[in-house]
Length: 458
Ligand code: URP
Ligand code: ZN
Ligand code: ZN
Image (cartoon, rainbow, N blue to C red; front, side, top):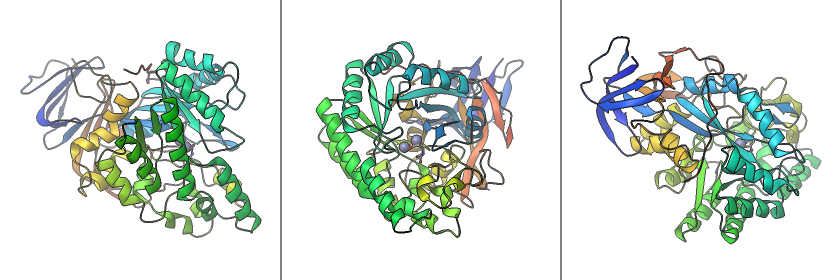
């Protein structure tokens, strides 16, 4: 007794074929064709539909204390919104405060994540360097199933690190066989530009983008790559947005350095006109790095298609316009940085990637699921359709159309940066750990059903 998905077009990062998938007790137990139904089976007729491995979003921030407030989706609502859009696993970031014990931060994140409806893992952000930090990093890798570390080159005076600290993280991660990930923006230059814009009376949301132009990111990406080169540490660059960063990653890879890059739908699909909306509306798209001017988006698609960028995450980090973003009504420096996106990643990448010929179906699966599983040590349990893998599956109706809106999304936030975007293709069924948790618009998730995923890198 389990779930039998019949006659679907099964799509993995490598193959596309018509077949049946049987799951039992949270695991894929058979893949083939012509399977007979068994008593008690839940049967899903997937004729004319695709079957994908559940999406993996390796960059989200649920319930994150940040810039004087807390991101609006908690682990329950955020993972539920993910399930509604076909994402069945997340990797969130433990972000301890500067001077906080990293292990104490981890305990806080475990307590918050207990209510997740889908499986979750953590990266550990190293927000400061002290006598005990290397030992905490060792415990993360060897005892806690966290073999990836996050560093912020931005956010000076808060969670950002300086170059000395970044070098220590890279060196220690290298010794531990762990992966360093980096938010690449020149923190001091951001402060300088923010302050001079503000002093000139430029206070609105659009000056957020002006204070963080592409060279701010490009410089930091280059610097992080060079530091990783000198410490011989692999590097994963989160939320890449611009040509300069693509060029830096591409050059590094061409000379044999292990540098990986991620981008997000908002950087592929929006341009900086989002900051010209009337009144304070541009604040909804205030995030770091900011949405770029026209001209950066097609190179990002090209980098994804050619494998220079390998992962599409969301950086899901929503803040309400009313009560949160408006903390920066008179000062763009105080607008909490971040926006929602976990629910729409697959539909946007399918509509604007696959249907517009920028990605093929296998690339779509790779960038939304399989590659993240491989890079971050979840594969083949996650990100694959193989016997023995977790039964996290998406049955995808390629004909269904929709319009993204704050009125219908499951994110717990009062704006949607993709408002009005048309989509074609959506989940008809989402199976999480062998249970159908979403079917034809009906979300039936279970608070606390998500499990913590310990990871190891191969
Ligand atoms: O604006 C953003 N991206 N907020 C979340 C924190 C981060 O930098 O990823
Ligand atoms: Zn970031
Ligand atoms: Zn982030």
